[in-house]
Image 1: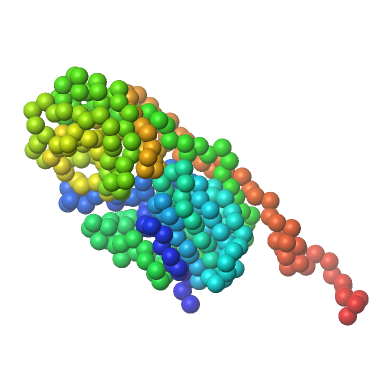
Image 2: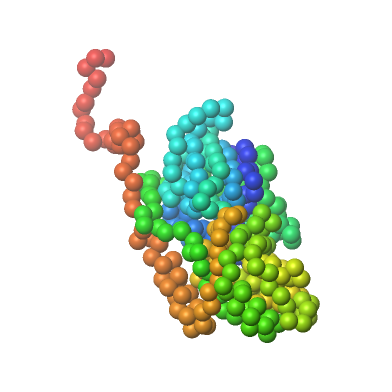
Length: 347
């Protein structure tokens, strides 16, 4: 029997993601990938995977998953969520664990992830990853292009995701300590590339205003409510390339931060671009978040990127071993031939 995770309920929107499909935007193919690559990489680190191993990204409401393997090690990193371990799919209640840790589950057990709080996304990684063939070098789900991930779409009831490992390795479970996922209130941006489409007063209004993330946001773009920004000479430009983090200002004057699944070209002026070091924090912002923007230089953006890369390289330093429960210790000792010549006197 092929080891797998079986989807009992997919949650609101759960997809297979990795760090994206790079090098194909000239063909109209979005980069895509995890909205929050920091949490994504940390989830993989907890189960011992390489950083770009495909994992599940759940948005706002998590999935329910059944273990169809001898056993499997899963990890959960991202926003707060109620994570419940049930002995069977029919069980009404079970053990509740917190995110930021790994857990080893037996065949037939079920993980039920509830509503996601204080953030938008939660990542579920599995030791060894999924046995899914990449498309254009990536297993990231491209929903608009209907490719990658699991049949190019969000997960549905009854989907069975094959695993690369039939069983988990013998090791203690781990958790992350001191791993800060609090998104900053002020998002750093560099001006342009079409900031000349706006007057100095309008650019000043953009930086002095507070914006709210609206319910119209998705993996393609984060729509903001707040001060409207007026264009100097109309809002139509010749379509040009779009980078992740571009802040478009369409005709209604309400900024949109373009996220992982953004289109490859667009015809609205872009007043600024979120620096790459702040994109993971933007990706985890939930609806209702209050943000504002602050300008930085290219040199400051590059320095922030180096700091982020150093932090990513140091994720393993924040992983600590969990003490196994007494029952697990007893089972492990019983399985070892520590003393010979012992018999059961009662028998």
